[in-house]
Length: 143
Image (cartoon, rainbow, N blue to C red):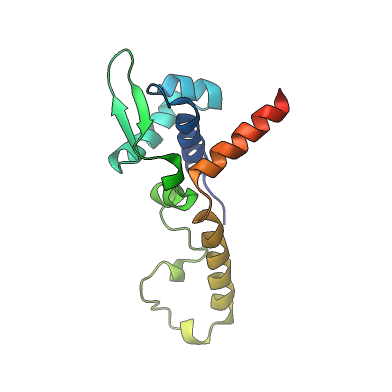
């Protein structure tokens, strides 16, 4: 399983807003420069985040984006699932009721369930505030 570029960039965008947007909104142009990501690509991603209520936009010369909640209230899983959709490792696990004809006798399904549970255990317990703290720690080491 791979997290797409969109998912990775969404995490970086949210982290950048959390780091920079405490006093005033953060402009996409500035995020793009710091994160070395195309503005157009970030605009597509932030549009999804805005519609979902993860960020709030403000217009004008001092406009930009702010988080709607405290960074500790966002899990990595909530951000990734919004951008990526399902993170299930196989298609048959995407269904509410698994209608695969083999699901009752499929040993590999147990493997996929364990893998999915392990992934969810990580992404649903790591918060945006954790990423921010990790980034701040890395930045201190570089000084």
